[in-house]
Image (cartoon, rainbow, N blue to C red; front, top):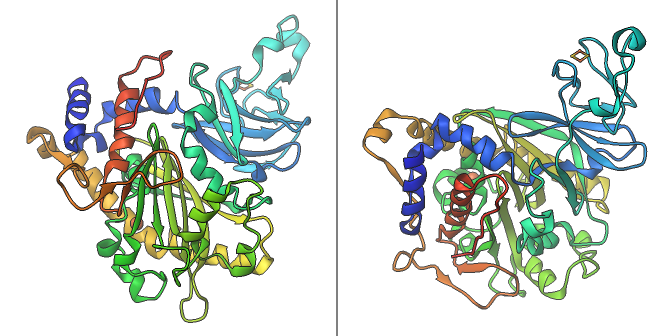
Length: 449
Ligand code: FES
Ligand code: FE
């Protein structure tokens, strides 16, 4: 395993990554400790738990957490393991309660995780401290635009520092108007026999696959920009590990879709209440935003339709996590988002168009999962191991392809255009490489390439 990590470190400047990273069990076990037990991990949106006692069950790595709003309105993420024998307490995906009661012997906890009591308390535990037997909690929890993140490591930098330059782009998507976003319905979940990093690196900005893998999507009129035009835009290494990509019109006067093809009356509410003029101008030219907050939180805003013959594509915002379940298995969690001031009809268009495109049965998602399954098979193959198979991430390296670094850009990060470029993925793996080799308690110093 140490050799694999060394090969990664040395190969990255040349765009070479050992295939075994997508299938090696030891690497996966280290990822749970070095990545998921240290980074800020996305848990949900505060609109999913609007009232006191509202809870949802979420994951950090493979472990369950109860994300709950207490009676004072504060959100907690409690490790879902009873302090008596470690039994999982919460059996529902979501709900509202004042008390979480363990199914084994009946210990009861409040929405802050405090132990309230247990059956036959005096006889069984009289004299024992309740304070020391509350549910364990994440080390830190913070929200950004209502997005709830948590970390298990108290030494991880504060969320806003961790996001760094990525904040500018999250502002641009989630702060387009003063109303903000809400989640439409519970998340969809589906298990894929592939490695979680395939989702993260794809959403870091793999636009190159659209013309091959998703060719059929154009055939049914579900996407309003040609493949060649869609490759125009920018690849951005926003900050350590966090990358994104914009498909963007050449000018603000371009006749194509504006603001990700959101309806004109909604777009009229997009303003500078929460973002600046430059962010608004970038959003106006944008057709697609796709990005990944390291390690496994991805965001996509793009024009979609479920029925091209009757409805023009409309902006759809989906957020997702690639929840690890093993070196060769992950569960995709998929939420659709609406701006709160959308009409009910607009929200319905978003939901239906999202379901038809980026969901278990969506035309994009069904395409995407298949190659990720095949890549994971190579990742765990003996042949890849003995022949020392390196994956190719060379697109956009000096002398390769047409992408050029551009300084003419209003936001933070290192920016390349057009989108024939894989520096966005190399940024993901450079930060990954640093974290996989860092000791707990020290946070890697990182500069963008
Ligand atoms: Fe929870 Fe015993 S394991 S009460
Ligand atoms: Fe895709």
